[in-house]
Amino acid sequence: MAHKKAGGSTSNGRDSNPKYRGVKRFGGQSVSAGEVLIRQKGYWYRPGANTHVGKDWTIHASMDGMVVFSKKQMKKFNGKREHCTFVRVEPAAS
Image (cartoon, rainbow, N blue to C red; front, side, top):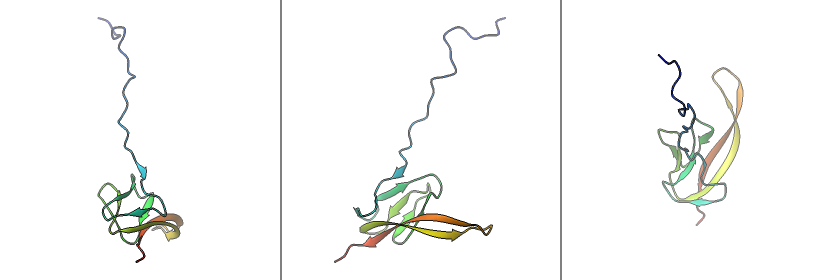
């Protein structure tokens, strides 16, 4: 009984489909309510004012306005401080 597979078979050649994650709307861009701002896995970016998060951590705009990014220090549960990037939507100036 042979212990090797027949020639020509290989364990390579498989790859997963791309997930198209990343920042979709950048700072200063105008957005409408419901638009996807960021697709991410985990909280790389945190939701700020006038945004909401989907179950796959996607951040959406809750209202029409302009995208603004800001950095802030957050205290973690173990007492360490962490630099976090927040994304928020500022209402359009009338």
